[in-house]
Length: 494
Image (cartoon, rainbow, N blue to C red; front, side, top):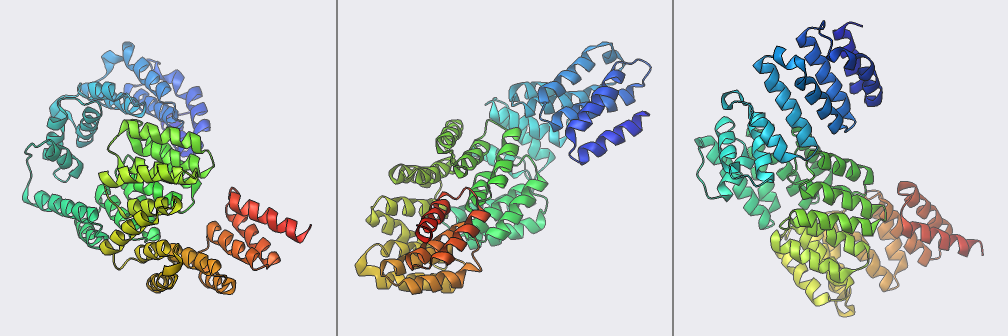
């Protein structure tokens, strides 16, 4: 088979995600030609890169590295031009990066003369230097800013070290916009921050960092659909993006999309195992599949890697709630809140204190949240759900929860809290009609389970069984729905 036809055939297999077939063909056809002196050097280099890519597609980065180093260590090296050797250095550094060998990756890229380094080379060197705490990380980030003035990550690193950096006027303006947006986010002014980031995104449509920040703002404002679209756009712009991925895994967990959480965590870990985002996502996946102890082990690893990562403590808070340990959950959410207050940390603290019976603390945080986000339905629902635990405040709780639903008919927190309040007051028909009215816009396995729970209390057993079945069809691992279905089945068929 001619070389170009072979390469096209393998590429077609890779594009079709038939990676094992591609590797088998490469082993049979590419590998024997790599050391054949009769094959021209340009063809052998193309064969080498394709063979290496096949290994990488299956995460066999060590095999990819071995193939490249074996090729360049033989007699072929003398026939390679300086440009060829520089590209091989880049290929080796890619494999080192994928293996998490950041010090060796950095050492490899240093072999490329400064005048021949691309923006990608400098960005990779700066990231590696930061990860291994190299003393020249700041200089590399400053060099990156010279070559790419809109590299906001570089600005953030240099600025945090108290060093000046060469900027032009437009870059200073853009950095000021991001700084302003981040300040607004810390004050929970997410609408204003989203508007600022949206304006910035119009000028820099390909800046993944800006798009991801915008996505986080929308997530905190409960616009889950648009937020998820923006997170995916950010990942498409930069597949190695790590910023804001902790919030994205929280969104996917909230959506009960275990497959997406696993896919995100796997990709993040392939990108960089020394950062917490990948471990946090995988911890959330394990928690969603009932493996809570294994999930805690991974989230503790994330915290050890980055003790100042608020998302890792938020993740543990959620896992501790699943373990029915609200006291531990409150401690974790408090740590996250001290590092970076968000709507998520407020909600986590409120839920933890309510479950632990500490309603005074829960009300305090709920009141703070509604003062910071007065037009947010979930904030109003948080106050109402806390007040619902006191018989004297039931009337006020109902008014707040109904007000939250008037603002956002899809506010799950308000629906659940108001339905629970109706059940507490033995108004089962009101609870059933409320859930029926809002079920169309909130079709989740959790909502169907809650609806079935209320139908069971109202002695509408066939209807309850049908809704438990729908919940289990949507999420077969829903233990609450399984238990409910079995209970109803026993009552119907004693």
